[in-house]
Image (cartoon, rainbow, N blue to C red):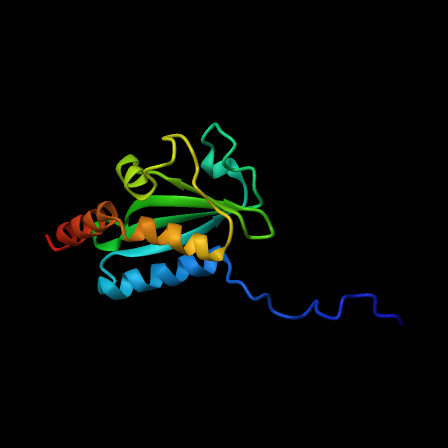
Amino acid sequence: MDDLWNEQIGEEMPIVSPAVIMKEQATLLGQKTKNIVTATVKRYESDEDLTMGDDFWESDFTYRFTLVARTLGNYRFPLFDITHAISMYPVRFRVFDKVLAQEAFPDTEPEGYPEAEAEGKFRAYLGFILGARRTSDLVRSLLAQAKT
């Protein structure tokens, strides 16, 4: 039988998927807060659960990054979504909290979606969100409430 496949087909790609990067950051949050505040990364199979009335969801893969405080009745705060095609990049972001969106992406229109063309830009944009003062305030607020 002839093997018609490209010889490189089984080789690993030199880039890391956005979902893996987000899951790594979710793990780090749990470590930093002694798992009092954690984060989940969930993939949505379709836009049925995420209907927002716009074209954000027209890509193959959509993930949501959510802060979770289990001791507060499993309280969940969706921080942002990303969406991308099978090629992984570019990645579009949707930040739910308007204060956070303005802080992380001050040059983006209020209804716009920042877009990262490659892994390095994705990591930078993710850093803008996770490193923002507003994100720290949200996490610290959950930590304080969890101690009551």
